[in-house]
Length: 249
Image (tube, rainbow, N blue to C red):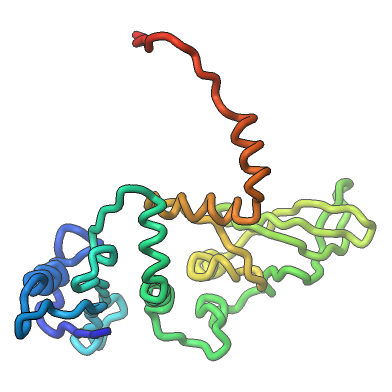
């Protein structure tokens, strides 16, 4: 694996926010070497990671743009913009290069230098506020009659600027209560939504690519047996009606 750091032309930006123009030029330069021979033999395949971390050019700023481009040199199924005949083929290609895909994911999630030793979000670590909601802790919440009761937080989700939590009361009842969130808490949730309530709970995000949607269904039906899946598909198969299709105006 080769890491190459760009140190020139770092402040220009292309129209495409995904691939800045300086990385696009680097990608074009790299691909010109594909197919060439070295001593009569093709150049060996390699994983290339082109990075741009220009912090030294903007020491007084906090919004420095960092970029990274992953490219498979002489590796057809690990290239930017690679096309696959099916989702299954794309999934298999991703499995074949799982380590590099995990590295890409890690670089996205850990692109900032931590400012706390315990991993706590800075919005919460340096803000004066009431104790935050934590799964497993006890809080006073209104019951069905409006009386304050002690309840243990079982699960919670963030909706806008409020947290909707499910609480198990000491009386044996379960209630849902809303708690307003401060601006700092909302910012901390956006930074780390999966661990905001003190336990790891994967928050569903939007599907930006067909593979994201594939992963969503794969995670949901990973433990489903083949027999059960076949029965479900058969029971929900749409009827086949013979005849010509018609256009409805």
